[in-house]
Length: 225
Ligand SMILES: [Fe+2]
Image 1 (spheres, rainbow, N blue to C red):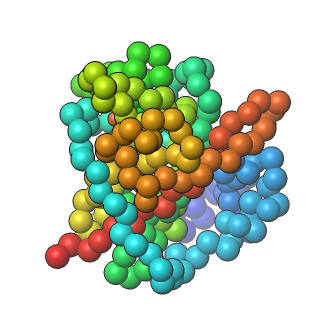
Image 2: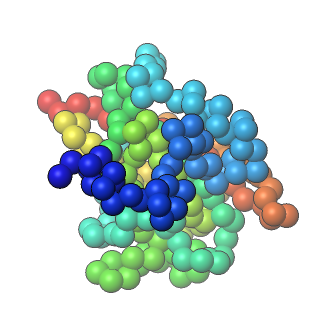
């Protein structure tokens, strides 16, 4: 039975179920960072076009994987548990293909960062605090929420500036292992794994009377050789 026939025969409209059908002119769900300014958001969302081409892309610089990656992180768009201490940070961006200059839908990001309370990484294998995976949308876009990471000292006289580790994977593209850094954070001058090309500015916003941060981090992947 075709779906249309099924709907016709079961007469869903009689039960008032049609109210659940998304109308064709429905507006997209607001992103949290713009929920207080929905009209502008809708315009911005409509302006995103998966056929968009940006000519001056550069492949994103790679960094070391480090010892704290763990596979199997949950798919979610919030790395930290509710009410984790620290400044809320919402990171948005898009994953791009260096060769085609177009956004990559269905790219996967695997994200992990240090614990703001213990200055350590969660164990994985059941404890995935401060870890998440996500998939980019049809426009190559992603968004996740976390707290602004802290600097930490993994060994004496070796400081890491605040960063978020990530692995980016997309079909027919080379896997990228790297880190996100944020402008004007401390310890960047002594962090030998820091890279200035991976720094993005942070904007401060207020919502519901509380301050939080936003940052935009775009990722550019090279094709498989
Ligand atoms: Fe780290």
